[in-house]
Length: 150
Ligand code: ZN
Image (cartoon, rainbow, N blue to C red; front, side):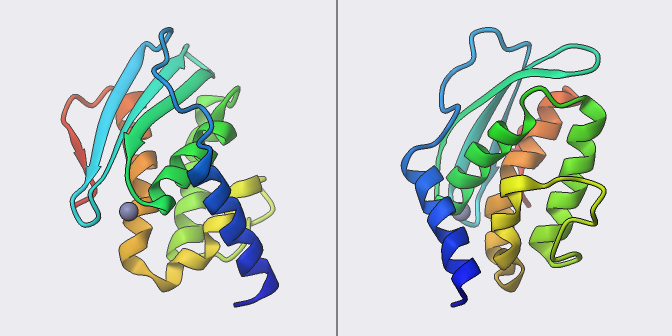
């Protein structure tokens, strides 16, 4: 394992141990639930949005370290972002975890999301990382159906 990969793993483990924004968001005006049957990951996303911006975001759930860290890092990354930026971050994140692009194209600052770059070698684990994003988008778009990664 390279130095960079072990650093990334440290970040993931830290977020799993101490997930950020892990709570019920009382001010939420959107909410969605997601489930990844392959791994048993569950997540509930709470969003407070207006027409343009993510004012606040939080999550609750249980699952593997990847899924917990992904939710934690995602919620950190999205606060204060415009809805357009959120969609752009999701596209970039998807490219990173599926190996379409190893780094940010330079257009978008992916920040800590880069720690999931090693996942493209483990396709099954990609679903653990993307579940929380699919759930977020369902909340944003007010999709009523329960989200499954399948
Ligand atoms: Zn998982």
